[in-house]
Length: 98
Image 1: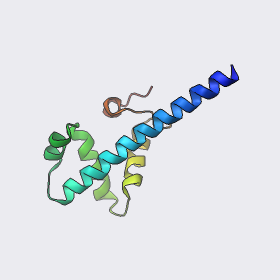
Image 2: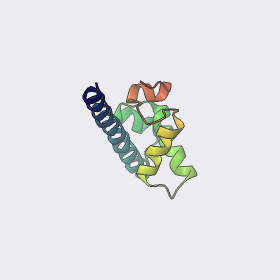
Image 3: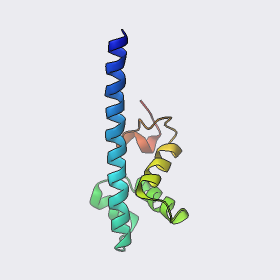
Image 4: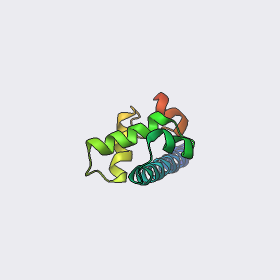
């Protein structure tokens, strides 16, 4: 039972890491596009993301210009209501955690 729990914990940790990495990449790309003068709707369309999610990224950066991409991603995770970060791209906007 202990070994099974350990394997499950490792699998969950890896999945969370992948989710965080995906969000970090999205934040990085969205900020680069915004820096080039693109608007949230254009960025969302280009990246096939929800416009609200891109707006959130840009709003956090506007409110906290000193934040790094990592800090923005972590704030999004924290503000989403997910206790540790287990929000996929689809569930993030719906604030549903698995």
